[in-house]
Length: 81
Image (cartoon, rainbow, N blue to C red; front, top):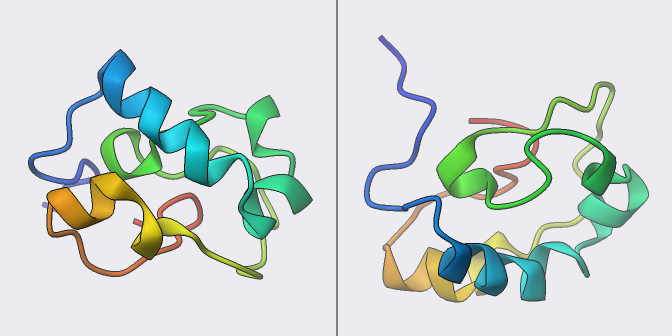
C-alpha cells in the first residue's frame, strides 16, 4: 500500500513554523492559494493539498530545513505524494 505520510516528519507546531518560512513564499503555494485548502502547510508530513488543477510551477521543498534534516527526496509535496 502506498504511504502518504513521509517517514520521520512529525506534524508538530515547531515543524509547521519552519514550513511557513518556505511554503508561504513558494510560487506554487501562492499561485494556487494553498492556504485555503487542507492541509494548508507541512505537506511532507500531512500529504498533498486538496486543491485541484494545480500545475507544478515552482518548489522550495529542497531548500527547507525539514527537507534537509529529514533527508527527504523529491519535491512538490503539495502536489504529489
